[in-house]
Length: 306
Image 1 (spheres, rainbow, N blue to C red):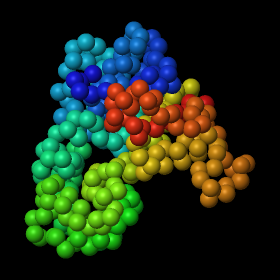
Image 2 (image 1 turned 135 degrees about the vertical axis):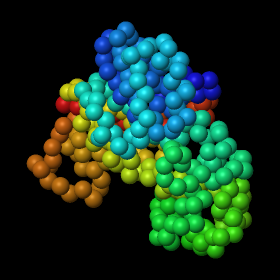
Image 3 (image 1 turned 90 degrees about the vertical axis):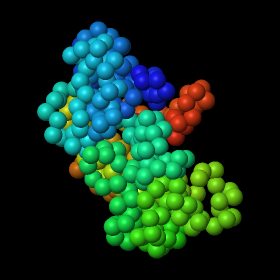
């Protein structure tokens, strides 16, 4: 595990994945490598294939490769393209959505407004466009979807109007000035009562849009389930409702349950191919939240393939 990184809900994840000698696992979100390391250390002969589209993840694998050799492999791949991975027949697959501590804590990645830096926000800086360019060129409809739907910002109309008005001024190019543009749109009475920075929601929505994060989750979940062997377990950790919703709906579909209150599909037309291991999402203990505050919003769901 890399210094400064603590894997979320580690004990609970290991409980569901039940690592034992000779099993094979797919870690779709390598990050700091904490979950991968714990699986490799759990028993002899366990192997892990890990994915990460962040090029900076590569150097963090050196210790695992030195210690576990061929039992561990990192694949430079966006989990949204998981279907193109040739490996299959895994005993368990894990997703840990959201940003890693390394991405949040590196000012030059542009994910945070705590430090002034270029507004990039790309999980893979080698592809796509930075947030600064996306904000200058996105249609109004795309901005609305990012700020209103993915950022869940109540004052989205004001924010979208301000973003459009600031195009060409340079104010959207850096995290500091971008955060200021957004913050000015939040009424003073709301800023006084907010427990978060006024730009937090809009920054989240912009980041999700730039990286197509929800689309990647929706593509990856069925691909991951297809790569499980019978009795294999699929675990997913989410950090906000936008990530948790597609997980919850997909898992309910696998278990032959209504996906939502609006799902009126007759029961005899449903197909049950998995059993739920979590009726409700598992959340961190108070002790874990005290130890790692970033875990406080984590939710873990798991299913077993029939």
